[in-house]
Structures are given as C-alpha cells and as structure tokens.
Length: 301
Image 1 (cartoon, rainbow, N blue to C red):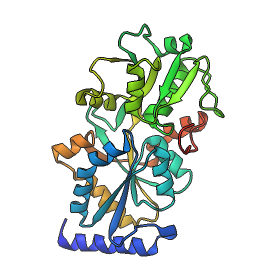
Image 2 (cartoon, rainbow, N blue to C red):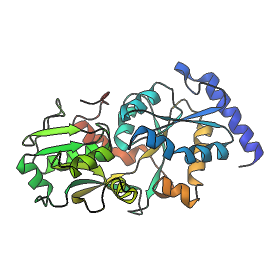
Image 3 (cartoon, one colour):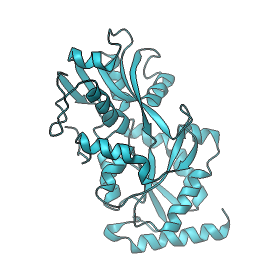
Image 4 (cartoon, helix red, strand yellow):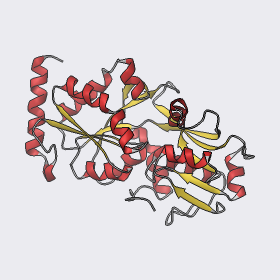
C-alpha cells in the first residue's frame, strides 16, 4: 500500500471515529476495532490471532485493537452496538447480527481441508462407541453436547443433523431434543471434544478442522473420537459494521485478499480468502429461523 493510500485510509478512520453513532468507530482516534468469536477458549483465541492483528495494523497503517468476548453472543452484542468496526463471525452469529443491524459481509477463508469456502461440521462419538450413525445416537436416547449456543458448526448444523435423524428438538426450549435424554452446551469446540472423549456424553457436534487442530496440538488424543456424520458449512465471514465507510471496508477486504504468508494463512486455516455476500448464508438463515436459533442467547441456557 502506498504512503498516499495509507494516509487516505487514516483519514477515513478518523472520519469514522468522529461520525459514528452510539460511540461507533473507536475508543481512540485511528483505531480499527476487530472482534473475533471464541471458537476455542477466549485466552487462547486472543493469543492465536495476535499475528493477524499485527498484519492488519501494518497493512492498513493504523492501530488495530483485538476483542474476544467470553461467548459468541458477546461479539454480536459488541458489533451491533457499534463498539466494533470489523468482526470475524460464524455463519449463525452473522445472521443473528444482521437481524439487529445491517451488517456487511466482506470475505471468508478458502478452507485448507476442503479447498472451498465451505468447511465441515461433524457429529463425533468415542472411537470405541457402538454408534455408527447419527440415527443410532438419537434412537439410543443418550446425552448430546453442543458447543456455544450460537456456533454454526457446533450448534446449528449438529441440530440439523440430529433433527434429520429423528430428534424432535423444540424451538422454545433448546435443551429439549427427545428422545435424547439430555442436551448440554459446553461453550466451545474444545470442551465438546473433551466431553465426548471422557464419556460425559455419548456424542457431540464439533467443527471438524478444529478437532484436527486439537489432535495436532495433543489436546485430544489422535483417534480418540470417531466421526459418524458431516455437513458442509459456508465459511466464517469477516463482516463490517454498516457505519464503517465503504472505502475503509474495501481497504480491509483488500488486506485479507492480499494475505499470502503461509504462517498467517495456517493460523487462519485458509488457503486464501475470497469475497462473500449475504446470499451465501441463505441456508444458515433459513435453518436458524426454523430451529429457533436466529435470536442470539446471552450466556449458557
């Protein structure tokens, strides 16, 4: 980025700081506030995304402040209240946020495992479990673990899968999915993996690439969990608050599309980034409304 473009971007940021409503666009002048959903523990997520924060700061020529809430709904609340300029959301948290304010989707990652803008949500059981299918899990009426209640691959898509397998999940009570005897929300993919591995539940919904990362890190023994079903999920969108000027949104989008450092792409679980539109999340939007997950829930049920 040339010095002239950097200067222009700084001016745009200062304009956003001065003109946003409800305190939008920064606690301090020239700061771009970026929020990230905690698909693992918030402390680990914050440390993991520090290289991205540094990259954006250098590429855009401005200060970048990273925010990780304690749960998914916290990022939605901060974004819709104008306390964030840009945020990394799951598909479900994106449609929850757009139901409250006109969020603008920018880009998503091209997944390293699938080679497409889609990744995989999975239902997993212990490796030595007798269950071979989701239907067997549901018919047995055991306990099932979701991740964060607003997680796309840890809550919405596992609910789609167990419903298709015969579970009668209620929209007014997300804890009721008979014939499953119990449904829990662990708060994160790592906690769901541990709950299944320890036998606290018979099965759980998890983002498959996060499971693979947990296995690589040694947090979950490789082969301790077995996948019984997967569904394709549209990638996590990076989105902008509607008050962020269009030129600034373009600069942020271009910064993501320009990422070519292998280490940074590995951090983002991406081969590269691609533009994304609201229409790409039509299935998420429809299923979330049908299953009672369109409204974000604060905290755990």
